[in-house]
Image (cartoon, rainbow, N blue to C red; front, side):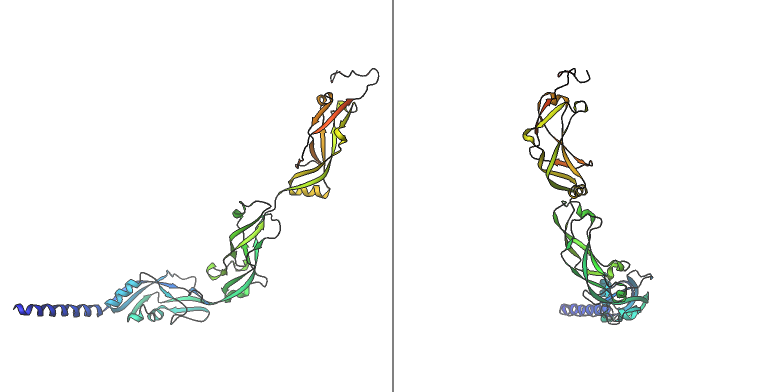
Length: 351
């Protein structure tokens, strides 16, 4: 009896193996929700996608009949999408819209037909897909900095870019179409006016006439570029070779004092004017003039000698600011002789 035990164990193992194999190969039917992705392979010259206006949710409910092992493999496959590309067997290869028989196409795939599975029911059974050929255009690149006040013309790091688009939409592209390097306003805030700067990663956008097309149908290569530009310095400077001096006295003292400037100085040299660029332009053009005004008070006149700082101003008045080296001017004042019976030299104003 003990001699039969090993034989019984072997027979049992063989029987179990045969049963398991038969069980795995027995035909069954199962309903599986299959994710499906319609896409073009990278570098493909064809565009493929589901047409608009359908209740397509990127998956199909499929009843499949086949062996237990094949069904288990398909269930594992269902964790990721089955990609249907234009080069798949049964897929359309001509441009335009096509009503695709999902049962036929999926049956030809290695994920289903390759495993010996048969589709008994599928929902939806058909779906409209759109396919088009991609064409490539080489276009000029221009910079759009919006309302930024620039000094000179901005320069992109690439002068031409490739535009990939559907051939069916080629007719709406204008003859002078251009790719735009659009500078974001917020990227200008850190720039120093008057200094040449380089912005990196500026997006390259397709021509405006293609703005109505889905973004996934249009591609610009390269997708970004650098832009070299200079913000206009709104505060400009200009050096005046000479600014003449004028003396101003209180109204009561006009005609009563002789004022003499040290060394008979008549003007300041190399006076720097700073202010808004438009006002500096007026000054350069001669439509505005500058003077250095020495304003002497009654007390300064009676001190006989004073060191006076001039007040620079423009005619007509403006907000320009003036600077000059050594601005202090030494002046001396002498009261003119009064006619007999005139006021005393030491008389106070108003007496």
